[in-house]
Image 1 (cartoon, rainbow, N blue to C red):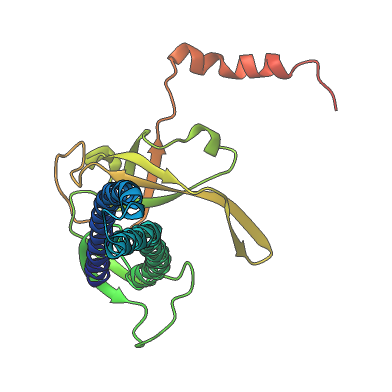
Image 2: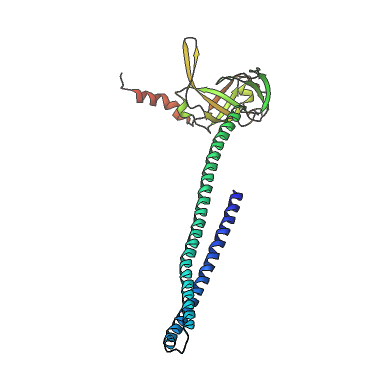
Length: 291
């Protein structure tokens, strides 16, 4: 691109020099034409005055012939100058036209190159995005930091199926990510950010208490599992504990993968009176109905 611009500047400089030179020649021709016109008028006047004198014998015929020849020469130079000026002006116009054409061609070529570069960049960007996406998919990231306890896939180049368990990790973080099942009838009361309490069945809740937690996310749709002839549908809710210290004992006890846990999600508050009156209110709302 830089070389092409330098070539353009060189060509434009040559054309501008040519146009300027022709313009200088036009100015010189016009000045010369003016001078010839004055000489023509003077010689013509001198010839007009000399002819009567030659008729009277005062001036020789040779002098008359000299003046006529001089007048003819001046007229020839005048005609030549008049014809040269349009040719020079045409040359100037052609040089200016070539300048405009060269600039237009340069801009057109530059625009085509720019469009081609943009198309190539777009293609390269799309390919790069796809390559980065493929590279990202080759990485498996665990939701928590910890030590690998057991690998489920040990074959090099093995294919991991969707939902397949890849490995077991012993968490090292001060928080735990716990998965719990919620019935479809209860999911309407669950939302991310709600407070929860996690009870580890291996530790007596009345002695050690539970782990303070918070709902992190809920699956977008139900998950169905088959157990013999029966199927079970549920939403998978992930709850993250705020620490691994039990609330009652203030102790940090070991928690290992596979331990059973019960999650209590606080969906609201009720007074004792509301709790006691709930059966009566429910019976009243269901009264006088039939199928």
